[in-house]
Length: 580
Image (cartoon, rainbow, N blue to C red; front, side, top):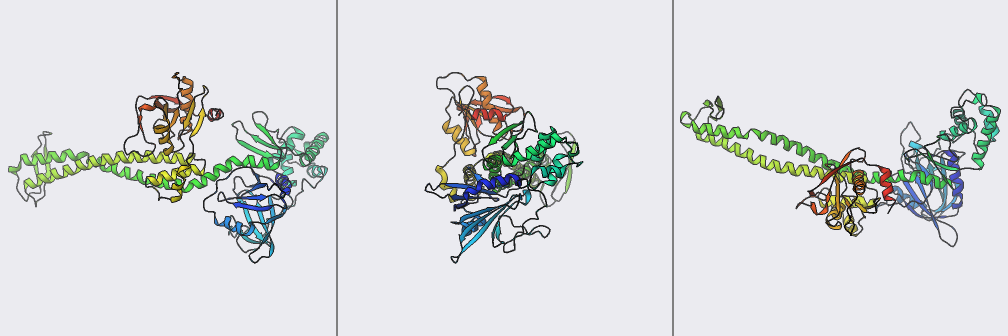
């Protein structure tokens, strides 16, 4: 759900405490995000972080407590922002009515030492969301440049034009009785009528108003009783004077709605959580999806590189399999050579074909000859072709085995990239790919060798530690170095996924079936089979797991294994994670 103008009003009111603060740091964690750290006034030198997001799915501006991993090289827009805003003083925050636009005015020093006011304009409007830097109402630059003639153009050096504001009532400036009078007698639903009359409110707010006054989100304006109209006015008054910053989650725990009023329209099965401030609500509501989107953006180039390598390896494998199938008739070439030698006294140079009795099949067969060669040379020609195909079959079999292993390896890398949650994990995967020759070596990646991320740690219901590798390098370290010979090793069968190590007790007590089942669920969850049911998971003792010489990272062979079928369950995973 998008952030509406009314909730943005409360965000702005809370941000007023930042006026007078100075810009300390500016970062651009991802393509559509900007983070500005402001140093507050006073002796404590405390800092607060403002996040501006122009992501269409989670556009917002608010205070944030989140930590961000910033790119090693700042993007050009970030450098521009530092040039024009670094050290600037925040002198005002503006919102035109309840439009989804906040303007932050900064008093800065320009290139020649003059004091100027630069405005950072955050347009929180879904797919049209943008972050624009202005001076004297002229665009310096924006995080998204818009050149479409059919829409508002946002380009450097053009005059900024705000979106046209609709002629609607402002909830915070209008008496609730006036609002009620506007919709009285209408044949429309209360929610739809309120959306048409009020500026900057979300559908969830309008529906909640109808539910509060009439007990039905589909209530019609003309059917409201006098008592219900009174309750409608009461709801609107409470909404602007006594806000309740609320987040709603569905049955699966997924965040569904956010609002500045309590939400009761969804009934049982939906969770509700209250926040002390609008900024805390907005930050919490969007933080998780935003972090996932941020890492997906950074993983996109890496995913493209691995996908290209996978497609090349797949095409090469198909060609080799086709060539191998063509080697299937090589034995017949040897047989023809034998037939020519057995009948060499009947043949002469210059013949182009002959019909001989085939003592292999017992039937006459016609054989093609090269007129330029003697019978003996023709026989040798067939033998030579036979040897060539025999050698080709042997070599192709090796190449096909190697190519199949490469596909399995690249599939595991794709799985690791898709599950990466931090830049550090992506750096480890880049290093692995550079060591395997898939990407060019980057000195910066090798500098971070000592900063390896830790494997995921879980505690089973019976108190056993379970470790899960995040990528192939970590899988190798976990299985071949960290694990003890008596620990249990688990991996999904014939699917790319993490190595899972179930640490056995030092006292030698046998593991319960429940503990092994929970470890198998973790193995299935951290694999490409996460969204499947009945996922087969192999498990065996670590001493039966070996890494073949020359094998790629994460590739092992194992024996003495058993197989268990499980269905991944995120709630179980979270429960085990919460025990650490």
